[in-house]
Length: 320
Image (cartoon, rainbow, N blue to C red; front, side):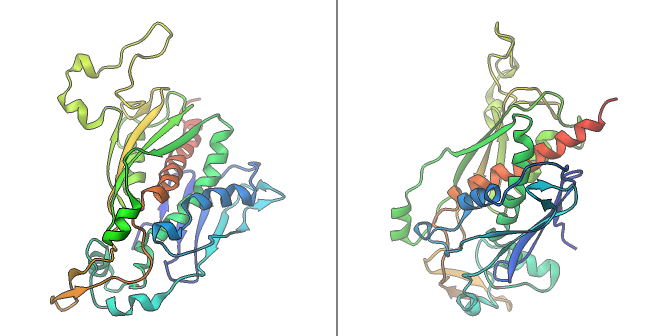
């Protein structure tokens, strides 16, 4: 079985394959009375939407709300959202049906399940992230009621024109800042706030690393340098802990960076194994992002929103 549900109280289940009829999500545990419009979801999906300038297929990504919202307010019942796939071109993958594409989950997926959808990677495709972004739009609305804001930005450069000419791809770094989080969110042992955020980020198919605050640089710091000391304004002079200590939020901004790997589907000739173990020369056709990083920004924000919303709801039952 595969784990397709994320969260404890605020739970999100995603479904669908890249070249199937539709992608979607079911959100359970959302409080009633939250104002939600279709445009709230559309504007987030628009940020993640495939764009021809990045090399990806052109999808409108129009969401449909099937349940859980009535007259613009959440009912407290499961919210179902779907986005129909309209521009998939499955024949582009016919030649790769028996080949494991380099850098993709083709081999590992088939080893686990004994079967796979070769069309665009099926459920292992980055297209699955639109489900997360749709759910994240709901979570962001809840967080806005508590003046919590999530903002992710690209902090590494890339040159799309050069990548197009070289028929190659690149990765990058996204820095996410969460402001307005009260102190006390998270648990001290196995359900640490930073551990859950790390799980959320590393569940994104293209994410290969994460660091909080000073992160890996803290390995070369002394304790006297890494500790965050108070300042005269009642705050802290630094935020090397990234807003989390002992798995629990400090009330400072939560800051982390994630590493996004290069898109594995590239136009350059490559070598790959087929199902019989033979090495084949391949050229991957179709539309693929030269750089997935810009489209990953709203995905990072969405996953962060799901985590913070879940912990916010859990905090209601932590104390009498």
